Length: 178
Image (cartoon, rainbow, N blue to C red):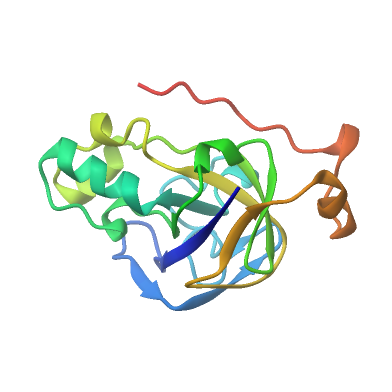
């Protein structure tokens, strides 16, 4: 199971406009350098640390949500960090995977919220309910760039890179989707 990074987005503070970058540095246990959550801000900053470091969404799901909602929806409108193509993101929840040289763990699915509707002015909750992407935690940092490969790795590979496995392995949170 592999895909590719199509776009990368960060925002310097909660509700600030998203900024597209060709590459970004992922910091272990923190998130993406310069992003609101890595800086300690963001609307959902009080959520568990594993759930707010990096968000990923599929480009085709963004397009489908826009069609369902009847609006021109861009990946930046979703306020997710990494836009992918060619990989089943929900299938990464509970698994280790790499994005370029960075090791991530799929922490939970990322359904949309009312805050997103307030920022965009569009009714998106239903359109993105099963298309909102995932939240992931950074276990081994490095550079993420547009075009990088996204792929599942074994627990053995994750352990080799310093991630906890076995009884210490992270546990994903199951989120009910509307």
